[in-house]
Image: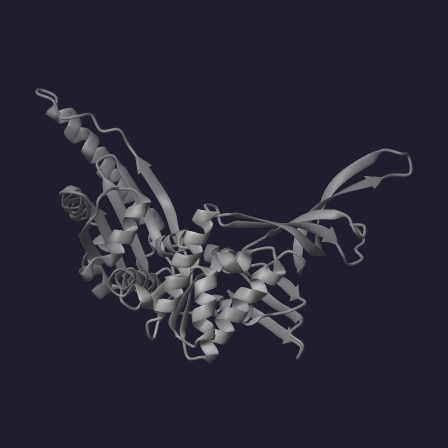
Length: 387
């Protein structure tokens, strides 16, 4: 994301001009834009022209509109962001108050105006405009006949390609058909890797599968690279990391990212640190439950006692349409930071973020035990049971 300008007044209102440069930037824009904000962008509008004879012709014109956002629609697979709202600035083609749907486009500037730019929104802008953040890890999770080629960026896991091919079963006298099916599958996975992975950016490509599928696939790919003289694959051979996984489905990425060999290789990436942090939270929950809590009520009370060491919060909570609720979570983040806590905002598009969402979206590891929080939970539960 490219920052064009930033005009924010002392009271927190103002506008920021941004240019989305890659599909991941649309995810950042989706997290930034809220209902009630105004967005100015270039768009195409169908215009009816009536001639003096009474005949009408329609033409499509490109114009710049400013709308007050009422509805936000984000397509996670295509990374397309659509904003629906009413026009709030006079325009020669569109009446004031008329509805229009803006499609935010790559490499086209848009201006976002908010009544209040809170700390979380400003942090999201800084993160989106950080040139170091790009998809530096790729993963292929596979099993016989099924594979997912994924890109793991700092803020989301994108499934770039799903390969699903039926492989005939191994039967007496029909081994050749099984082998043929396997070769066809391996070829499709290899093409998926070549098509969707940018080797100049990606530091590490994880190939994960149950059994020996990953090893057989890797051997096949390297043989094909030598056969076809594919220098790209041969030069980047060291970037491939073979790891065991339970299946070829996307959710297997969680266990893959916890592998010590993977953590060692991708330790500096945001995705790996989130997985590691969540793992330490679960460990703390088992061994020292008085130092690990989740749920808004407990986390707020722990924050009041200045007890939070690490606060984990899902970005999903900041997208809620209830302004007071968002304010409450922004206040929690700011207050925890002031008290010296390490605040991590998890992306709900990562496996770790999905898991945190299942734990209400907010969790904390404490500096010191607070058994009184546990006791209040037990009392609350027994009260509700007696009701």
